[in-house]
Amino acid sequence: MDKIAIVDLGSSKIDLVLANVTPEGNFAVFQEMTETVKIVNDFDGEGLLRIARSNEALTILRMYKMVCDVNRVQNIIAVCSHNIKNLKNYRSFLDEIYNSCGFKFKIMTEEEELGALYTGVVNSIDVPKGVIFNVSGGSTKIVQYNRRNILNEVIIPFGSYTLAKIMEEEKNPEKACEKMAEDFKKELQKIEWLGNIEPEFSCVGVGGAAIGVQLLSRKLKKYPLDSAHNYVMSSKDVTDVYNLVKTLDIDKTKKIKGISADRSDVFASGICMVKAIFDAFNFENITISTKGMKEGIIYSSVVPGTNEKPISDLLGFSLDNIKTFYDGEYSNSTQVGDLALILFRQLKVLHKLPRGYIKVLRIASVMHDCGQRIKFYDHEKNSFNIILNSDILGASHREIVLAAFVSASQTLSDFSLTEWIKYKDLLLEEDLDAVRKLALIVRLAEALDKTHRAVVQDISCDILGDSVIMKTIVTIDASIEIREALKSSQDFKKVYKKTLEVL
Image: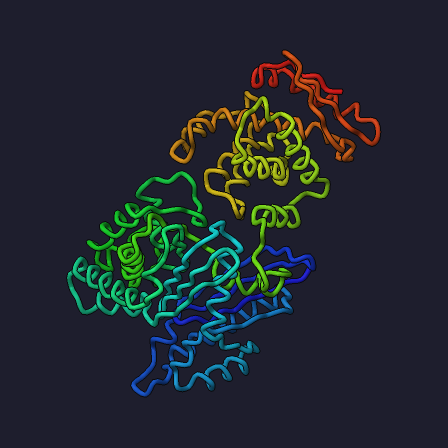
């Protein structure tokens, strides 16, 4: 298994991402480091990077090089923003980095930055038509796309650090926030194509500002799931966060749990910029993506085909990643997943669940035994937490929570109503019945591959009166699998109101 490192020298921070990769294009990030260094915005009167800031950046990059060496990373991709050219001595600065650390930085063009941002977002979030806003310290990147094509793109030299200067000049935090939001709104309205965005396009937020807004939004709402990626905020949610932050000075901002001290000076300006986006274009909501340009570079480097077209099945891709890197040696997740889908189709006349639940079933069936990585006994409880905290793409928070409950409810008595109540604001009334039906399907699928030999190739169900006759199509003797499946007959009777026979 190979390893790849992405070193990103940005306007206001330096990032390092390490990932394991396979020849087939699967990858999993195993380490990430971020250090705040205001490079592009800290130069002297002659436009040269200050020596103190240069030394700080070199110290961090030498540390990153040591991390790469310790992890024996051979493939290192070092990139820096086109904004680096704002420094008159950027060439000598990059040469010094190479001589000191061995990192040979590629200066990305605006088009390359926007392309990497698009690739990172579109291959990690299920928003077919979107407008991506990536608010960083020194600029704002905007990409409009429709499924597989970029329609419009632009970089505005207006970032959270640019606007933060207003906070330094204006002593009243509320007036400063109002001015920051208004100034950025005016900048956005200068871009003609942004004013012609059709209603079906969704807003996608990337970067520190979007992450900051969602963090406070989840706290205000007491959101039950600790996950930023794919978190959806309404216009009201953004306004609530803005109304809270605009009354805080920097000292109070530093006390907000989860906000790093080195970002407290730009936290308010970033939130003002997100608020301005809503005010300028009347978006109904914003979906947060924690995947951006760095992930886009990884996709382009190690996942075949993403340079030509996005991944068509995000959920399948992420489940493959999980299976590749985290499945146990004797896991039968693929076979159980296949059998579960067959049973879902065969029992459709009984469960009457819409296709919208198929994603839930796919996650739960493929990850049905993931808790065994920690402990075999009571592994269903561990599976619940692993599913909630795994990097599952292409599924909503609600679908991930439901999959966790399905995986954890291997018998009717395993279902925890106490846990269910914690997530009630994410769930629908009909979800409770769906979890019981899907859990039984997963349990039957798991039983029909009890020996992990994939002996059951297909299943045909005859529904006759008060009975369901489940006929297995097998390659060799499947008496163990049939015996295990029949252990679910009592719960089957309670859920589906039918007697189960397995042949």
